Length: 115
Length: 117
Image (cartoon, rainbow over all chains, first blue to last red; front, side, top):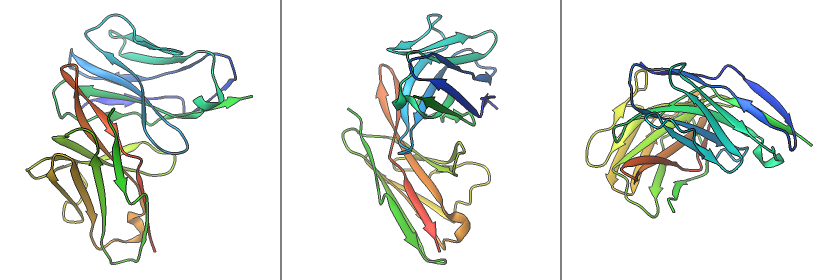
């Protein structure tokens, strides 16, 4: 079974600084998807970024980028120029490729942004 | 866009009663929907995968007779918590799968907070 591990229960970052959230996963599949989701206090899940395992290029979305190391099964999220609105719980998730497959979530990392 | 709604957003019910939560995909059709449960400051726990027109697939440890899931149309799935007890109090989130660039993406509803007194 696939597992996703987020080893940082909480992280803090100063506004305008950069922070990196860690995620490792375990799978025997060669093709799959990885995701970072944000859950703010409203508890609405928001997709931050998505990475296809067969793509070597790291995904980026504005201030958000990932460092995808397939051999090491590592998928970290870097948030640049942190803003107060980035404060949330962040979940790393894994999914197999076929339609209808479920997301496997990590335990989450609470990100606090200091002004 | 891809919007998923849930109703109600909050519900309080008495122990022993049943409560139904609706999940709707508003602007797309979803063959597959998912139901999650989340405790405070914890991760989402998948309860079941709901496929339109067929029986839901429950995760290990989830009581299918207690958490009834019906996916009667391509835009609506319902979760009924039967004979609710205080330990069923939780935050319930649904998501709906929408096809995207040859794959699919899960879009999440805003969640329903259930309190059983």
